[in-house]
Length: 457
Ligand code: F0G
Image (cartoon, rainbow, N blue to C red; front, side, top):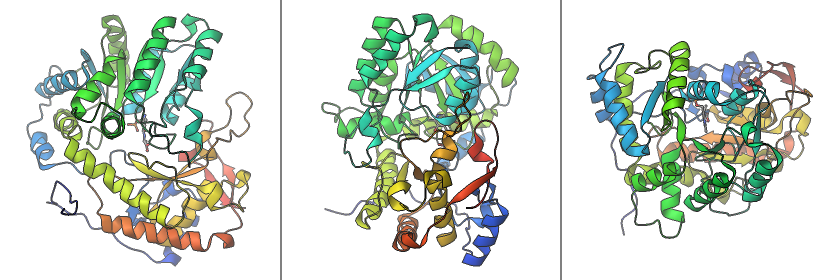
C-alpha cells in the first residue's frame, strides 16, 4: 500500500518569516499579552483560527473573474442560490457578510427578551447575539464532551434528557428554536451524529420547537458521520449533509469555514414569512437581499467552494492533517481533547499547567508560552472567552480550559505540523517552570477576549 498524499498541488506561495525569542517577548508585551493584538508579520504559523484563512482553489479564483457585481439580481447570487438549494435543500437564501451577521439578521426576527435557546455548546458570537437580546443560551451537550479522555465518537451530541427538561420548564413561546452547531466548535470541533440530529428533531416536534443549524463546519460534520456512524459509510458527503439539514427548518452559515472562502456568510431557510421579515433586517444591516454584504465575485467563489468542501477527497485530506498533528501531541504525552476534532486540536491547559490557578487564566498563559517558544499563534477557549455572567458580572469558569490549534484549510504542510508539535513538546518539557499566569487590566462588557488587556500576575 502506498502512503497517503494530498489530492492537490500548490500553485502559489506566500512567504512567512521566523523571528527570535527576544523579538517575540517584546511584541507580546506590547500586545498586552493578548495574541489578537499581534501583527501577522510577527507570527510564523498562525493557528488563531480556521475562519477565512484557507487557500482558494484555481476553480474558485477562476470564478472570481466571472463575478456579477449588479446591485440587484446578480448572476452570482443566482449561482450561489442554486448551489445552496442543492446542498442544503432549503428554498430561500439571504447572503450576509459573515456568520455572525447571519445570526444578527435571523435572531432579529426570532429572538426576544427572556427567550431560551437550547442546543449543544453555542459559539461565542452566537451566544453574544442571544444575550445581547436579553435571552439565554442553554448548553445541553452530552457530559462525555467535557471529559477529554472519553473516546465518544460524537461529542457534539445533544443530551435528550437535558433538552427535554428545558422543553418542560419553559413555555413554548419562550423557546423560539433549538440550535444544533455542526461541528460543535466550542466543545472541541466535535461532530453530532445523524442519529442524534434525528432524535432531537423527534423530541422537538413533540414540543413544537423548530430546529436551526449553525452550519459553519457542516461538511466536516458529514465526514465524521460517514466514517464513524454505522450504515453511513457508503453514502456521499452531499447525501449525508442534505439529510442532516432535512431535520431542521433553516441554518446560519459562516462561509469562512466550510465555504472555503475568505469572507462571507448566509441564512438559508424554508419559511416564506420568516424569510420576508429577515429580508428587511438584511437590507438594514447588510445590503440588498441578493448580495447582503458580499461582492458578486465572492458569491461566485463561494458557490464553487461549497461544492469542493463537500467532496470526500478534500475532507479526508483536511481532517487527516488535523489528526496527524493531534496524534503527534498524543505521542508526546500532551493532554488533548480526544477524539481529535475536525478543524482543530484542543489542548487541556489545566492538566498541562497545573501550577496556574484558574483566576490567572491557564489557557491564555499556555497560548502565550507557545507563541514565545516558536512564533505559533493559537487561541484561548477558556475563561477569557467565556466572559462574565451578564447579570452577576462574575467570571464564568467553563468546564474545560482549552488552547485551540485551529488549522487553516489547504494552507500549511505536514512539515509545519511537525514543527508545531516539536514546539509544544518543548513547552511541555519545561511546564514546571511556568508558575505564574496573568491578570486583567482592561476588558470590554461582552466578547472580551478579542480586546482584553493583561499583565503578568
Ligand atoms: N458559528 C460557529 C460555530 C463559528 O465557529 C463561528 C466563527 C461563527 C458561528 C461566526 O462566524 O466568524 O463568520 O462571523 N468562528 C470563528 C472561529 C471566528 O475562530 O472559530 P463568523
